[in-house]
Amino acid sequence: MRTCFLPSGGGTSCNSWRYIGSEWGLAATDVKDGTKFYLEFADGFDYGSVAY
Image 1 (cartoon, helix red, strand yellow):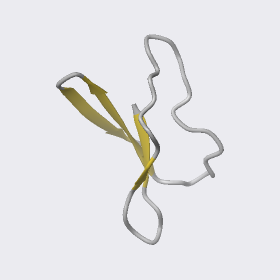
Image 2 (cartoon, one colour):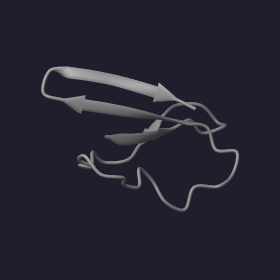
Image 3 (cartoon, rainbow, N blue to C red):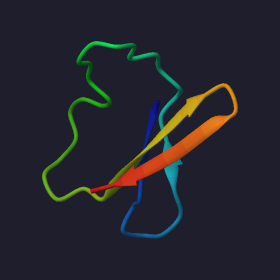
Image 4 (cartoon, rainbow, N blue to C red):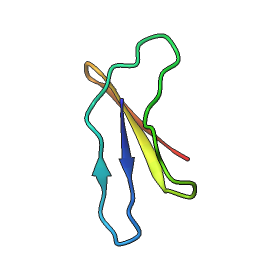
């Protein structure tokens, strides 16, 4: 998965892909409160995203 941020100035900035696996893991750290972001998931040909 990776975390993609939506800066107030426009555009998108995504972190590198990281393997989380079947356990709890951190998608991103040191993110300021109020930051807009979404998560992208990929597993082979399966792909999806989640917005918060």
